[in-house]
Image (tube, rainbow, N blue to C red; front, top):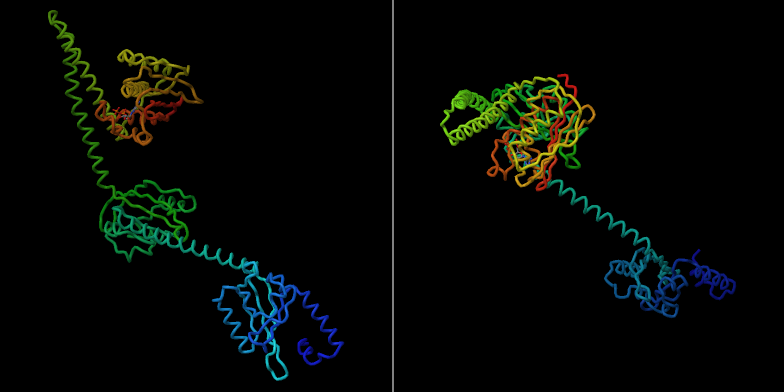
Length: 514
Ligand code: ADP
């Protein structure tokens, strides 16, 4: 029932007046702010407001009555909602808006405003009723949500851009490197192949991309062992490293290829892909082989005349005339000494070529390990007065191994400890028995080895950069040592800190059966 209609038509009626009073009180008690404006008066002034409106706006009744509602917007006048209200009022229609209003103290509050017109019997709009709700909290929550959404969208956009850049970055690397590269999907189908692959294998991009790796060019990559390794990459993230494939490839002939494969660790759509790098090492291997052949031939060729010279020098030593003089004897002594050094160097080179061809022969017999260490140390000690070699510990055990080769290893470690610690006075040798192994550690207080060099010093002909000129050597001693120890099923390793010294240790199984 429309209360205002009643009010107009039965103003004089006392009972109705009482009813009206009751309803007015009910409206006063409402939590929504309610106002009534008189549309018949100029500028549509407020003629009624309830207590909730006073509370929401912070103005008192006396400051509200007689004013147009717009005072609630203070200086914030350009809101489009104001035009919507104006339009509705001029048309005599109702409307619903959410508008920024300001309390008397200037605080912003969001007002959900519902305006409805009151019509007389001639359908003229006499009043407007405005019902307001303070929806500031809801608006703030909405705004926070929107902000969160915007931030999230920005982050997603950024991430997408990064991914796209990563993709471009990756594909530019793939295209530029001078190695054949394939990107494979989880089913081992080629997602992309770089130019180098296309050129090397004389194939087209069309016949490669989209084809399963194992079906490529005459099923040449369909190798059971390779299948086994590739299958493991994605689930375990275990890369395939340095897998050699020798094959008669269509178009390019017999080649030796080195394969490396990794899971591509980019997030999102790239997560499940494999990067397969294929390097043609046919020529490199051939050069290495020729170098090894040369080494083997050269050292054999050198060895023969050297043995003869050595024989002559030994004969001369036996035939020294009585009046030859000290100088002559010294010179002969030095010649024999340098011949021995030369002989050792050639023997080492021969060792390398024997190791290369797998011809290293071990003659294992039992010997007292501690005695062997002591005798080897004594021999080195007698030739180097600047250093004091100290033995600690013991194994108390007899080991079955190739004694001369083990002596060779220990000799090498001791000579290095002396050579690369010229200023130091002490070299320590520690013997121990660890489980079913004997262990020897040789510690010096010398120049030490950088972590990068530690990884390489056991390679053939590798010498740490800065020592090349200062210390003589060929960089093969440790290579031979490691091979000898490996052949005995033991291990050789280094622990070192640059500038502080090094400890080379090796273990040997006590009971070697093979
Ligand atoms: P060489 O001594 O003839 O160079 P090795 O194979 O015995 O050959 O050693 C390889 C390299 O390892 C050496 O050139 C040197 O750089 C490093 N090295 C070996 N032993 C030591 C040591 N005790 N202290 C520092 N560097 C060492």
